[in-house]
Every structure is written in structure tokens, then in C-alpha cells.
Length: 91
Image (cartoon, rainbow, N blue to C red; front, side, top):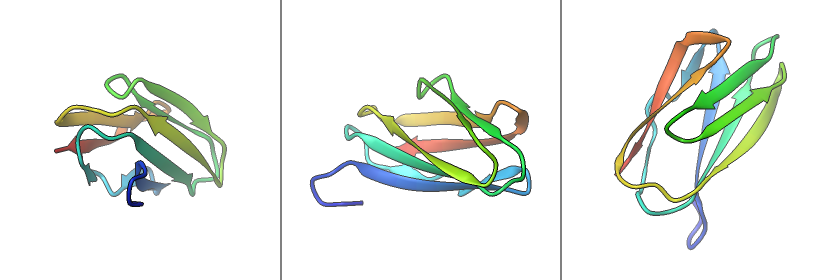
């Protein structure tokens, strides 16, 4: 995280799952999520609660910007493999 800037987390997608699975960030601040897809096929990073849907090509990365959120647990998943799920914990 940068002082005065948005919070940033990095998620890595490999072996059919996200790591970390449950990162924690402060509430009431914008969030940048950097998603690195280490697989040989595209993924679709999706979350209804975060209001995001982004296809990420094989062996590449993407940045998703999220508005400030209230405290809660926000689910995300790979829409092409819905068993691959995680949560952003906002406190």
C-alpha cells in the first residue's frame, strides 16, 4: 500500500486457484487488484459484490480498480472455473 494512495493487493491464479484466497484491506478506501494469470488459458475474474468482470489472457495480468467499500466480505471467482473462489475481507 502507498501512503495516501489506494490500497493494492496482488492475486495470483495458478493450478486452478487464487492466492491469497482471503486478503484483507481497510474499509472506506479505493482498492486496486492486480490479477496475475499463470495458467495457459484465459480466466474471467468476476465478482457481483465488487461489480467487476474481466477476462485475463493466458500468462498475463490485469489491473482492476474498485471504489471505496464498506466493511464486509466480498466474493470473487473465475467464471470459467467456479470452484476457484476467494474473498476480499474489508475491515
